[in-house]
Length: 110
Length: 111
Image (tube, rainbow over all chains, first blue to last red; front, side, top):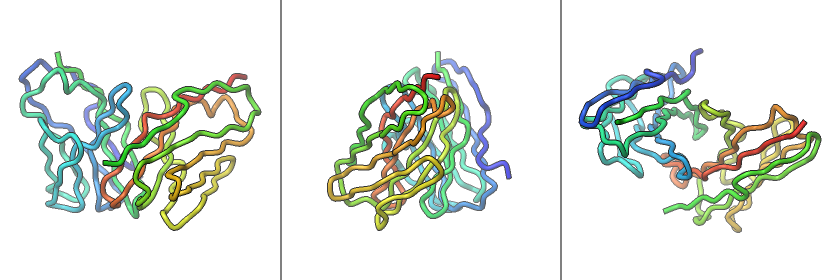
């Protein structure tokens, strides 16, 4: 099993550009999450999904959109990137509350 | 909103020492608490999950306890090794859907 994978690993964007981060899991988990990790702030939940076709807002959803068209995939979109979105993004999935994390995507917005 | 605090932010100990990491949370009505390890530049690795009905969980040299009434959890690491050097994070869920993380304790074990 690959577990939770994230694509890409690194990305540099210019302000105003758009991009999509892909998260995939092969553990048949219902729940999936997107977090951002910033120095001194810990991990903060952006959006989450409790099953295929469902999404919900987390703690810091502004500037991001998500989609869960297939159970194994959870996409995070930035429509117009801002420097404040420079961060490390982690995807996670869970079964019975235990979360499993991907390796992260380091995003820099110039 | 649930607030999760981890003290100290950094800890340095000699190899072989037993140590305790602390996690406190403001809302005692939690669903579960999970401890993670994060190595530099890497993702989070789950160490222990404690359900709200449990008092502790053990895995190898690790033991995590939970006291909901006082809003505290501790992670005990026995006989520390240099390979234990990492950042340790705790996360609390009140609903099973949303998790709130502490900012972590950076542990250095000196050979």
